[in-house]
Every structure is written in C-alpha cells, then in structure tokens.
Length: 262
Image: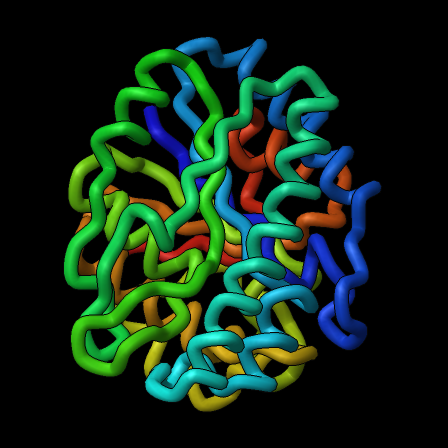
C-alpha cells in the first residue's frame, strides 16, 4: 500500500508572514509517521509539502508561474528554487531528527514542463527508494519549461505524476482547516465528481499567499484524480488535529473530507 501525504504550506508555515516555519507541527507529524511505520511495516509513504511563506512569496514577487524569459526573471526563478529548497531542508531535518529515513527528491531535477504542465517526470529512483523502505520527500518547486521558459509546479501536480507509475491507494492533504467547507462553514464529509460542482463556487482561495490556486484548485485537481483512478481515496483534513494520520490510516476514522470516484 502506498500513501502520499502532503503537509500543506498553511500547516508547516505561516502563509501570512515570509519564512515562518512551524517546526513543532512537523515534529508532531514525524512522530505519527514513526508510529505508522511501526504499526504497518509494509506501508509505503511519500511525503510532499507545499512552499508556504517561503516559495510563494518569492514566486509572487517574480510572477514565476507565468513564465521566465528575461535575465532578471531567470535570477528570480533561481531565487524561488532556493527558498523552496530552504523550507524542504528544514522539514527534512525534522524528519531525520525523529529517526525517519527521509530522502529528498527535488522535483525540478526530475521533471520538465510544457506551457505550465508537467510533460514528463522520472520516478524510477523514487520508486526504488520506496522498495528500500526509505521515506521520499517531494515538494512544490520551480520547473524548466519548453514553451514558457520556466514555471512553478505544485505538490499536487507532482503527486498526480507519481500516480502514473506508482500504485497509490490513498492521498492525504493536511492543511490548517478541518476539511472542505460548504458555504456555511460546515465540513463536507464526502465529495465525488458528481457532487463537487454544486459546492465548487463556495470554495475559497488560500488564506495567505499562494500562486498555485488555493483550495478551489486543489479540490478540482483531486476530484479529477479520483475520477481517473476509481480505487483512489483522497482525504483533506486538519494537520493540527491530534493523531490525524493515526485516525485516518490505522483507525480508519472519517476525518475531514473524503474525495472518491463515487
């Protein structure tokens, strides 16, 4: 069983202030990951994380997602990549400190995009790392683009590519809200491709700086993945909730919002 877990930028950073890292939250998640690996030795985990107040602030400054052409834009492109790596290293350090065999796979060195969409991604080394019981770590990142020079790819887009080559049963997206909320602020326990259009207009953007679209886009992407992979379950939940991963993946409690094909 392979599970992709995203630690959202709103969870691991304060998206309203540049470069504020929530180390305590990552430490708590790391302890849950240790418990998961002990309780389910055959479980394969891939950790992804957003760029939060590190990459998104820098990316907005340079409008990197729209393309890269000039000398100044290429310098900005490199700077966006540097701060994304900075956050990733902070997260990696916490995972290693907890005793997890975390190994970072930098997306910008694995993939190419065309007009802002991933064209191809090499996942062989990551798949082999899973077989060796390592804990691969990926993240939202810059990407060299064959049409517009350069752009930004989200963690969700990287996850979607992993589904092409790795048998994934579950995706967990952890943020700072309890799930997908309806127009009244209540958590929607379930969403499917059939029911989503009714609620999509009520979904908001990110609570902070986010160049990749916020909640509305993420839900749309996950619903499309569920439609394309009928066995897939996607859970959107609050990463600050005590033992959220234990409840979702071991106790099988209905936490947050579950997105599925039907």
